[in-house]
Length: 361
Image (tube, rainbow, N blue to C red):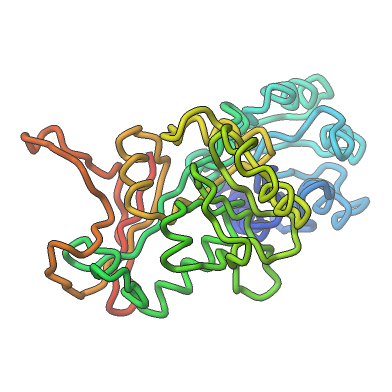
């Protein structure tokens, strides 16, 4: 196996941790000797051993004199686990190939420095872009402490998300909806506005086998959510309501009742909240990523604030053709084409008779 093939395998392994390690990064590692993989591993769960540890333990004594390929710079500090560089040195690794440096200030080049000081040959940058892509969320959150915001919506060919009566089931097909469930396992939280909760009463859970449920965030300035709303019925302490600070007095009894069921509250000044302010508060809870699922008011605000980091817009070959139907964006008044919003770096996917536009900053 050549260097590129070995790192490709490490990246493939890293992806096995999707939905299980947030807010930690996805990391994969392989140990290679005489052109053969003798050990491999990935970060399997938050707080658990790192990828390098699994790979080195599988390699055992044969790790001495071998090359370690790892998708992210090995850690050099004590966190929830001991530093990986110590084990790499102890195992007698001769060379370490790293795809990309860790932006965490606790690591940030220090892991590479320790390895070099121990006499280990180090190379950095192999498949750097691919390694970055699998950890977009981690890189954003570790740097800014603000969650990665991912837009998800399903629309008709004429840009509608529901009829004028609010009916939206189902615009997209089953294949697209399955992809949405995969997204719900990948990102830590789902965020919707109170109108979506009132109109659709969604559960906002993940229905994939052996997957964790995301946090469920509802923007509800007037605190009109009903206590029996589906998003509040899970006994997992993952429901979060963003509401106006004035409600701490006017709706105290309702708040206390909901808090007893595990619902958390974030209070903001005023009644018109900036999504940027919401993200900052959510980031303080250790939530590194959010899927924005609607409705059109929130999606439009996110575009206006230029705060969307990426997304996937699913498009069905259907036309409602009613000006009163619900558009997925609203209240834009551009006069010049040069000024309109343009999705960055678009990629096109096919899901049966649906297509999607996937994009990232």
